View (spheres, rainbow, N blue to C red):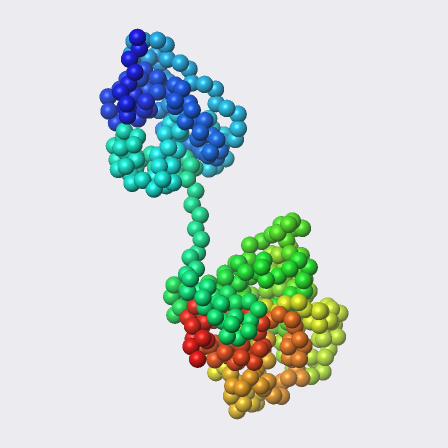
Amino acid sequence: MERRPAGGGKAQGVEGDDGPGTRGEEEKGLGRRSWFRACLCFTFVPNACLASPAGRRLRMETTPKGPATSKGPATPKEPATPKGPSTTREGRSIPLNARMARLYEAARLYYVERLTQAEVAARLGLSRSRVSRLLQEAWEAGLISVSLTYPEAPSTRDAARALKARFGLADARVTSVDDPADAAALRRRIGQAAAAALPELLERGQVVGISWGRTLYEMVQAVEPTAGDGPASLGVTVVPLLGAVGEADPRYQASFLAYHLARALGGMALPFHAPAYADTPDGAATFLRQAAISRAAQLWGALDVALVGVGPSVYHSPVIQAGELAGPTLLELIRQKAAGELCTHFFDEQGELCQHSAHDRFVGIPWAQLRRVPRVIGVAGGPEKIPALRIALERGYLTGLITDLKTAEALLAE
């Protein structure tokens, strides 16, 4: 009668270097039980694979090289691999085998059942170091994948609800930032939060306006592109809300953002090749009469949503830093204590629109028309923007806000 290996034993095992065992005993381990495990591996991990260099080692260890050295009945041949896809990370097709079943079992116990490596070793009758190597090989073979979700703390959800209640907003999104003092990281995180919210904020076929700025640029960069007319495509029409602001980076201009947002959402953008401020009032009127710009301007009255940045006071304004509204106009804004701006429309500490001599040179959506847009969503944050955001929220200039936790807490503090 054939002697069966002891329980927990290494004769099941293809782990020949964990203890004594002959090649014949290893091959016996490729019998009914191990084949069942291989089928499980195939069923539950269809993309399991033998990746290099681990793949070559696995194939060598599981390929018989000669006749069995132990006496006894002939070793049963390994059953044919069932048909189905199984590829390496590089896409090469490889067979499943008992070793892959062992890798899968070790990974399942460790990652799914949350056992320690010592507990996995005891369960499988292996050494802890062997379990560690199996887990590494399971990763290299493609059995393990990782998915990360940025953790939004309950405090961010509470802050969003409080913003909606305090300022009567239709929508508010608050995100956490590791280092709020890092302005670039702050803009990037707010932009990512805005991009993630767009599928819920926008509806298919809507007309969407977009202003300019670095945070909106981060939003557009973070939008996950959709394919053509697929089900994820929103098919929106994106319209720039103003021309190019001074000497600011072209990537931050409304026309650039509109084009790339429309492309990512499977929609279309209208061109708007004009400066935000013409040299003269007649020059502004000439730009607005151009066919392409006129088509965009006509859609300002049909906007469903406007995505806007919120600029800080005149002393920190990117509009001023870009070279717009200099000289006498800048002095006018300083005298009126311009506290913030939307689409370069400056407002004072009471939220009243600042009056200055450059108004009639503006090539963009008029203030009165912006106020009639059903949904105006601010995408902004940071300490220098808190006063402007508070004024805009209290005056009802925004119907929605996407910001960071520190900014939200400051807005709610008073």
